[in-house]
Length: 162
Image (cartoon, rainbow, N blue to C red; front, side, top):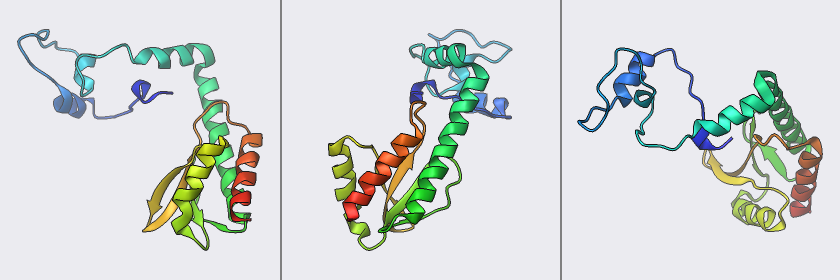
């Protein structure tokens, strides 16, 4: 889902209202109940919740839960494959949907690898730095990503260090 349709969960709506509440002559008068405009940093905005509503209407709670579970499983699969791939090492345990890893012998070549992957069209991995080490970051969040995609990216990575 686009960032614009993100969801926030909080137990402290009172604190959220105090932080984001806006008051100006051109705004509606304060209400006793919570005004949704007081829950975000923006006052004037397009209907950003519409994409979220559409996906909830199309897939429902269980559909979203399945997507999240599948993304977590794919990240775990990718992390396991990276841990066994010569020339690479995981920099952190795979906890959710992000896999952080680097080149074992030449971490300074991470930028070169990122560019090669993007140009090839095989994957979009982002560069990062983890505990001072240049690294790659694979985030699994696309509902269309499959095990075959994971395997294809692992093959592309293997070809880079071959």
